[in-house]
Each structure stands twice: as structure tokens, then as C-alpha cells.
Image (cartoon, rainbow over all chains, first blue to last red; front, side):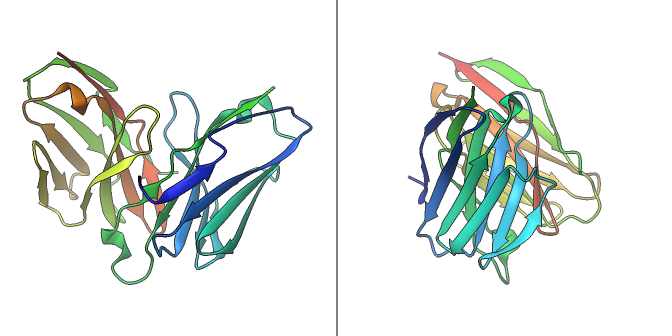
Length: 116
Length: 110
């Protein structure tokens, strides 16, 4: 139990569907992250939110739309995805502010997404 | 995009053997180096956070060293056990971004 909960664990959707991934943490962290893990590739950072503000967007296509309503919740809204978007999507959180470089990230178990 | 490389990609060892693997990263603009252990169907779990050149950290049978000047970190496992089987990830922190390696997949054979 890492304190970061992701739902759903598995998601199968068609290319025309709209769905959302949810991430929740009650660790008091102020930074939250979305990562994509494709087969045989390193974890790719997608988005970073610090104190609810998006601070990083690593050239992610607009069919992925993040939302961070508060420091404890992070969503990834999915719309008209492509088969190559099938992957494991991991959420993480960490403290921010002074001394944050000494703090590890806490990860959820991920959502395994399959696009038909 | 910064390049973080881990070697070997996979490793099979016998129970009781000691082993080590490498994480290579850029030697400039270094903030921190993280090691994570990722078991199948679970979430990555932090092992070490290293920030200073020459750092050595230890947790039980697992230890890590850091050389920021030449851009590498070693992870050592002494007397491997089957429960050590996992993928070991390193992540290089530069600015506000983490750059992950592809991991070393370790299998410990009983």
C-alpha cells in the first residue's frame, strides 16, 4: 500500500470512446504526475502538477487531457485514442517545496489501458 | 530528452549469489538519482534517493553508490533471494523532471 490509488486497474475502450482515469493520494503531497509505460520503453513523463497547477506537458497529444481539481486528485481524460496509446498509465505523487529533491515518488498500481 | 541507460537489461542469478547493475545518466544539471524496485502487478517502490557525489546508501542486503562527476550509479544485492526478483529502475532528476531508465529485470533462481 503506497498511499496512491488508481482506478480502474484495467480499461478496454474503443477509439471513439471517452473515458477517464483517476488517481487519488492522501499523503499530503503537492506534486502529482502521470506516466506512460509502453512495452520495452522507459517510463515516459506525461504531465506534472505542482500545487494544482500544470508545470510540465511533455508534448502529449491533445487526446489526453489532465485535470487536477485539488492536490489529492488527478484525472486523465481520454478521447479518440489510437491503438498505440495502449499502455500502462501510472500516477505518482511527491512532496514539493524546499528539500523535495530528497523525496522519492510514490506510485499507484497503474491502469492497464487497451485500445481496440 | 535526457538519456538514462541501465545495464544489463535482464539478469538471472542463483539464490545466494551477489549481483550488481548500473545506471548511467548525464553528468550535468544533476539534482538527484532515485532507485525503485518494481515487482510484477505492483507499483514501483522507492529504494534510495541519492543526491551527493560519493553517496553510499544501504537497506538490508541492497546498497547503492553514486558518482555524479562521471554520471553513474551502481546497485548491489548481496546474497540474492527469490523475493528480490523484480525490475530495478533508476530515475535521474534534473530540474523538475524525472527521466527513467528502462530498468534491469532480475530473476533469482531458487
